[in-house]
Structure formats: C-alpha cells, structure tokens
Length: 419
Length: 80
Image (cartoon, rainbow over all chains, first blue to last red; front, top):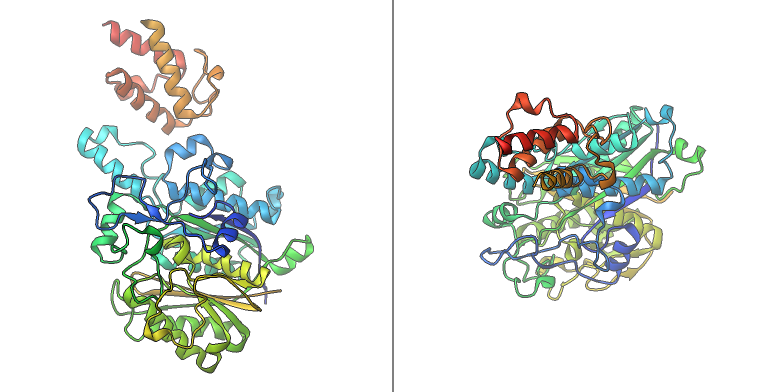
C-alpha cells in the first residue's frame, strides 16, 4: 500500500505568518486575541477575535510575499491566507520547480468552512445601495471556497486533482485525510492539503454570536476569552488564517531525498446525526471518528502521546469530547497529554484542523507539547487528564491524534506518527 | 483639465491592475501589455464610471482596449 508522508508545512495564524514564528509564540504561551479591529464592534455582544496581524506587526502577515497585488484586490482574505500557506508548504517541500510531467501528479485539496463571507457581505451592500451594475465582476470567483485550490493550481501549475472540502470546522482535517486517500489511491503523488478561514466581519461575528457560539464575557480581557476546559468558558473566540501541508507518497519523497516530517497513518470520519450545532450528548460521533482513525493506523492507544483536541471553549463541546477521549483511551488516558491550541489562536473554523495538525507534527519534531492557556479552574470532567495548563511541556511524542468537529455533526480525526 | 483626465485614468489602471505606472502609456493595451483579462476590463470600466460620474454602455466598453481609448471616450463624454 502507498504510504503518505508530510514533506512541507505552511501557516498563517494570529500568532505568526510562518511556521517557526507561530510555533515559537505558541510554545511561549502567547495569545493572539484582542479587541476586533476589522470593524467597529462596539455594539456587538462579542467584541474580541484572534485576527491575523498586519505586516508591520512583530509577527504580522505580509500578503505581498506570495500573492499578486491584483489577486489580493479581487479575492477575500481566506483565499489570500490559503495561497500564502500553500506557497510556504510547497517551498518547504522543495517542489516549486517541479517539472511539467511531475506537476500532472501534483494537486490541491484546500478548503474553507465558510469562504468569502466579508466579500458576500460588502457586495450585498453595494447591490442594495448602488444597484446590480456596480457589483464586482470578480464577486463570485473571489468568494468561492474552491478558489484557494484554483488559485494555487494556477500560480504553481499543479495539474493533479483540484478539490476543496467544505465541512465547517472539520474542513482542515477532512482536507488532509481526503488528500491522503487520493495519493494512496494513485490519483496523485503530491497534494497540497489544508484549510483557511477569514470570516471576522460584521455578519460573521453577529451570526456566530446569535448562534450562542462565541465568548461574550471577556470583552474587556480578550486574551482570557478562549479557555477550553475551564469552568468559566463561555464560547469560542473566532480566529482566522490558514494551514497547508504538502502530502507526498513515501517512495516519491524518499527518491528525491525530501525532508520527511511525519506520516499520516490514520483517518477517521463520522456523522453525529443528532443536531445542527450541538454535539451528540454522549459524544458518540467524536468517539467513532477517533476509533476509526485508530483502527486504520494499526497503533495501540498507548502509542499515542499527544491529542490536539477540538476543544473550542464552548460549554458543551469540550467536556463531551473529553468524555469520548476518556472512554476511548481507558487506562492509557493518564499516559498521554491533550491540549487545545485554540486557547492561543482562537478557532480558525475551516482552517483549524490543518493548523492544529501542523502543531501536532511540530510537537513530534521538537518533543514538546503546546499548552492550553487560561485553564485556571478545570471543570470536573477534566480529572486525571494532562491538559497541559498554561505552559508547554517537554515529553516524548511518538504519535499524535488531531480531532476536528463541525456544525452539522461532522467529525474527523487524524493520526500521524514519526517516520 | 484634459491632462487631469489622463492622469486619473492612469492612476485607476495602476491601482486595479497592479502594474508599474511607467508601463501605463497611452498606447498600452490592457490585455496585451498590462496583463488584464476580460473581467479586469469590466472592473476598470466600472471604476471609470465611478470616478468620472459617467455611464459607459456595454457596446462602448467593448471598444475600449487601450489606455488612450479610455481617455478619449471620457473626454468626449465630458465635452458633450
């Protein structure tokens, strides 16, 4: 069977727009949260978010590095983040100069949860105020979710499978899992896979706040808002950015002497079949997703040293996931560490699963697990689990599990190991 | 006044197409010289309409292929 390895990484996050900066800040327990600056959120229930910082910031994002000026003007932020992260991953893998023949076997699977919400919002206002003839001719293809994969394929000449997952907050994990299968099935040798989000705009914040999903009690202390597993948690803090990995068939990577970060060995998916926003009360979908990934991986639970949790900081979700993890791991629970990096960078929605998979890979590379910030008073269900409160922890990390669960009751789990 | 129109047209072209201003000569073709596609031209025409407060019908817009075409069209409309 064809094995799938990771040979390149790319990140755009609220704590840094390249892999090493973001990781350094995560390990230093920094928070990317702040008062919303994209628009005046004074009258909103939630006034905080984890925004990608501007280019002049210490760890800001410069879109001019990899995205043409013209493209920047035409597309929504999530596409800009996605193109940049994909470019980073391809550069890291050393595949930017691939031959035409190779590029027929290289594809993209980069999705998003929501897509171009800010542009849909602003062009709707143009339509309403100025009429149909003022709507941008780039409106549609500047907002569509598959246009990260489209733009990246055009920019780098990647003529293999061109795909885009849309499964809300599971998008990033599904993108990687599905792309791995495409390589396994022989559709491609290399896939840029991941997810992006850029939905910090009035309708995005208002919509999630009305769904009672966002934190609203920490508007005066933004860095305290994302607090997974803590008793005072009251919803997630919206993040933005992108994560993209370069997946490659193992023999292909070995033959060209590529640096190999990790191997994707387990992928599980399930549906809750329960409720559009609330997770299943017994966490059954989460459990089955993890169980399937474990079975596919061929590993035992004792092999898994770190779980990067979905852990969004919502009152219901965190403990249900923890309960499912507890049931799955049984006695092996006390040996592993589990944390939620959403405590530092917020919830990147469609980007979350990919960004967090990259943190998992870096945890294996550096043998250190990132912390869960703001875990001052763990809720009762947390007993006996090492949730890595406040500070990163050096420990052995041989294999990792990443969970992502989304609205609609969609669940994805990935297991990766060192090679 | 007419020079003002030329400068404003060129500024819009630079901004929308992301090209160096010295490339935006009056003879420059949007598609052949400045890397625009047909949708970029639709967007440019919309920007001219907004900037100069004129309406450029589709059949006239189709004939605007160079920077000079745009400047001339706007001058004529404004002079009328």
